[in-house]
Length: 120
Length: 137
Image 1 (cartoon, rainbow over the protein chains, first blue to last red):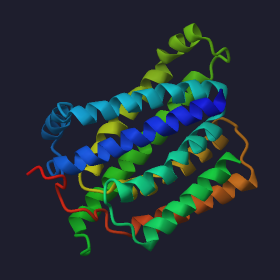
Image 2 (image 1 turned 90 degrees about the vertical axis):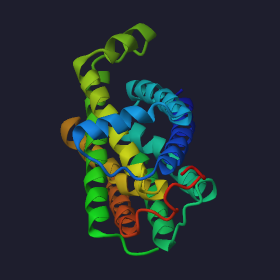
Image 3 (image 1 turned 45 degrees about the vertical axis):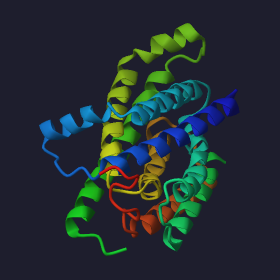
Image 4 (image 1 turned 30 degrees about the vertical axis):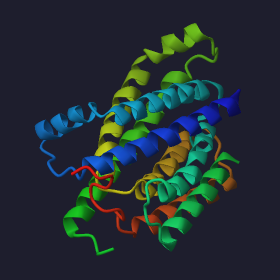
């Protein structure tokens, strides 16, 4: 049960993050941070179909995570669901065409190991 | 990859900090709300979803989502994920100090590795893809 919930969270989170990053790159850099303007830009985002889909994935991940918290410690739940890290960084390179230098690869590797240890 | 300007560094730092804090506090609040009853039936779950701590957690996580979307509008996913992962460290510490969860030496070593990884990635330029990729002007 615990691990099924972890798998659900990881899959949904990965899909959600990839869609979000892709849509926000397409949207372009947000530069106006006056509260009213920012709120309007945020509201406008929800007309983007793939962004809405990413929120749906996030909701699935969120409710699976809530359920996980009710059967496991917070300090197990949070690190265990971070397995999506490794998958996401590789997909950021392959799908989003981000250029990862040695610092990003090694930094991400450190974090994956660190997160695995947190779950130990 | 040119060096990032001061403006970009400042707004990246501010947005990343808000992303980390809202996420940690949101998760913490959810955890308090969810652990009040140990019976994981559907009805009990639904009841807990509307407890004050869970609602506060949800509000914080909504702010987290919007700030993170804003950050992703100029920063790479492979930058945002590692840099905001310092939140795992804060979560582990809060679990120890406020929820009395046990922290073994493995967890402390994990914490150290995450901090090191975060520092490595934070030193890179936030964006490596051209602005507005995907062909939409």
